[in-house]
Each structure stands twice: as structure tokens, then as C-alpha cells.
Length: 220
Image (cartoon, rainbow, N blue to C red; front, side, top):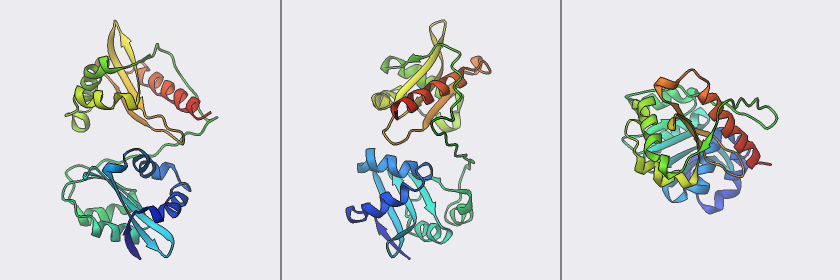
């Protein structure tokens, strides 16, 4: 097995590989399409077949996919000291041999195909713009200090034009938010958060349903 940097000559086998399972390779596709300048990909190859891949985004966020042998080989080539690494559970042993994480989270991949949706939009939804940047950041920080504790209004503003942000207001105050990045091939729900004092009222369900509705509409 050989490991090679992703280059234009390898694009045909890359796209053939990731298109076989778009949900598991979502960020490989997304970052290569939209954040190429900040993205590096390594391929573990046997002949012309891809056995695994790593994606490094902004020298800090790493995606790891592939067979056990490929994962072990790719991790050996990873030279970053501090990372946020996402990989299937099957690679946990190899990851722990490489890194000693300060925090570990289990993530679940959920996939929705058109026709399977059961939308429940029971509250008034508003589309958010840059004027909502600080309330968005505040809700995110309060909802999950460990994950979003350092998020700022400026960071929200810098990316707000590239994402669809929806919210629910109570007495003109933003209390629940969610976002997605609409693309032509698939989308994910990026952020969902509700102010602590307004939880258990179905706001997040309405937000997610409204986002799903827009995602599916975008793929007609």
C-alpha cells in the first residue's frame, strides 16, 4: 500500500470512490469543492484502488476513512501535534495509539433521503442575517460551552452569507437557531441550539424540519 497526496491526476478515482458513499465522505467532497485552499488530502492506494483517505482542514481538523490497514498507515503519516480528529469507531485503537485525546465524543451519522421526511414545523421561522450574529453566537456559547465556548459574532458574520441560518423568536428575542450549507449534491444540518430557558417546546424540531424542507427543495 502506498500513500500519495491527492493531485489532479487522481481526481477520477477519488470521485468514483467518494460517490459510492457520499454521507461517509461528505466532508471530503465538501471541503475539496468549497475550501480547497485550506484542504489537504492523502490517499492510501493499492494499484488504482483507494483503501483509505485522510483530509486535513486548516491544519487542525482531520477526517479519517478506510480499512484498518489504511487508517494505521495514514495515521503514521499524520504529523500534526494537536488535532480534532473524526473517524469511524473501528479506528479507535489506531487513533489512541497515535494521540492521547483530552476529550472524546461519539458521533452518529443519520441520513435522510427525499420522500422519507416527516416535517413538523409548528412555530414561526425567520431567516437570519448579519444582524443576528451576536444572538446566534450567544445561544451557541450557552448551549455547549465545551464545543462552542469561543465562538464570536465576527466568526458568524464571516460565514453567514455561505449558509442558511434560520431562527425562532419569542417576544422579538432570538431563542432557537439552526443552519445548513445548501449544495447541489447533498447537505447537512450544521448547528442546532436553543436557549436553556426555551427548551422542550419543540423549537429545535421546527428549525430542523424547516432546514430539511429547504435542503430537499434545493435538490429538486
